[in-house]
Length: 497
Image (cartoon, rainbow, N blue to C red; front, side):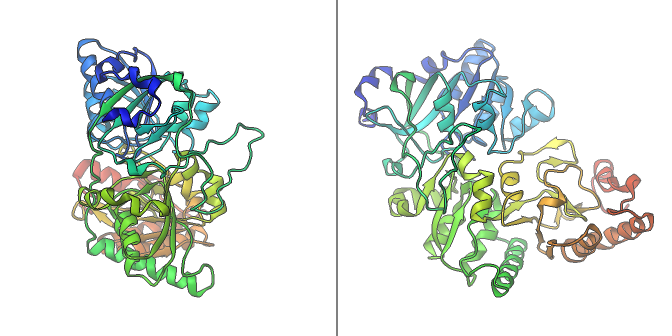
């Protein structure tokens, strides 16, 4: 009964197959597509485009909100469709093509992409492809489980392809808050004064004549891969809860804390899950991705409201939540990512930001994106939007990886995404380092003592002692600063030979 979901009857004759819709895309085009962290991506037209590319080679620039599900990035990369990709990805197949130099990947802060588009600083979007639960009588597009950059792509593109996904519940209607900032330099303030502020429309408003094609699909979002809390992530959560309790006792925040943001992944999800057993209550979130832990906190009566840009759940949690999404609707909002991640809003709300590091160094610089300084993993995502502007910038990671062959605490990071100036708190399962108000020499001593694993603590202390002998505001033995990474590359371990 897809016609019931296309409420503007004049659009009924624009329903076509995915293959027909894909023919609208030509070689060299820039395509803006829905999808934010494996949620709400267009699912049929990209696959049809990949099949077409096997017969008729073509290349596109693909912009999304964040990563795609259903192996779409892998499929498009293997079909050699992608010339350029931005602003985020997480697929191993695409990652391989990026690191081989076959796909040009532009790693951007997630709040910035549409600002660059709006001012024509990057190529204009030729076609937008947006997944929707329905189209309103006036042609408004009602998104599914994410907003991401979909609204701006649809508004800026001369032609729009809409994928109506019948597997997405109509109960999602009313969950979205589509607000587009006014133009600079005389931009009006964004009127979000609390996570629950509703300031826009429940659909993407575009003229219906710009909808060039409608494709009917029934494919589910991909499930998030969420590992259950383990001893290490429980320890990280415990350190964080103790720290926050101290902040409450000091009168720096109330028992409802500050609006919470957490990055994607099992570590951040497990840390948030730890708040269930904490003394804090009446919590709110102002984040990007609403993960399993968001709904666990709702169900534990710890969380009263959550604002984000997508809902990304494990298979089990999806089966629990989606049939009853209507029960959560009054406590949820999904926004465009330039609003969920907007630096001014993040700073004004005083967001408490928890993100994951690949590694950090003894002075507090954080690497979120590159293995060994050269191999891209996923991208910076929204961590920079929040870390620079949040009330507290917290980075978490396990102290070792690969059964101890890798230390997450190193003399110098091999790639810097977040400088020491933007990092307040570092936490591993070993302990917590509060870096606020500390000079580099004070930071180093604290990080080594509190965050480093015993396997590497003496090595870091020795490096730091020898660096101190050379002097400097930020002491280093430059010839050895990346020697741990070189050892990993040459011998497969950072442990001394």
